[in-house]
Image (cartoon, rainbow, N blue to C red; front, side, top):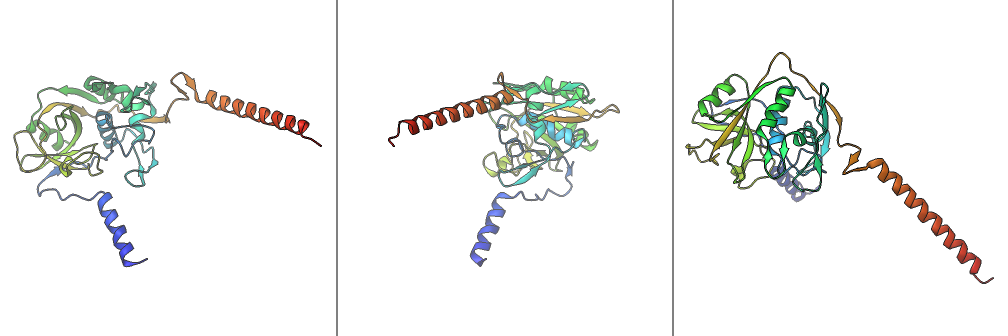
Length: 286
């Protein structure tokens, strides 16, 4: 391999691979697994509107109530996604099955799992449904409509990541608060990437530093924090059990039925072809 080719490959890796961010000295941060709402979910699912469900999955993974359910994702480079299936695939907790389907961002495909349970088309994630989901797992959970930075610090200091509904985008955006800096900034796992890089849907969303509203340290500002979803573990936590990526039945038609129809159509086409061929042989001059 030539030196030029090697340099091109190294440059490509620098551009696409996540980098370890140097956090300010004195920062407090929890090691919450990162899940990207677009690049860590199965390719059949469009997760552009699933910041809330993806943030929930990160918190569930932190508390180890979901086990790795790995698959190979291809974007933005080939990598193993450990928890992305829980965003949109079917699993169960005890006797409760998360098999309700709701449309994804494409409006053509349904997602199940956390997305199907919590997502309201046209409105985004229901905060109350998020609380209900955590309670199914056995957590204590509630919505705090008067969030403060001091409260957030207490939660982080006690080892509790916090779901935050913010105004990072005009439509609103949900992230996981995983830490804070000594100068009043917030550290989050952002399921859409790092907005400090100019735009969303990059793969740099783990432990991103943003400015808290009213703070100006040169980072993108949260603009507004509308609510916290507080999640505390109990002694009665339940673990999820993976079931399947999608149900056999999609939009009223069974997948097995599609296969059967395809076989029948292929058989009919073969019969017609053989019949036409025999007729041509019979009419061909000797």
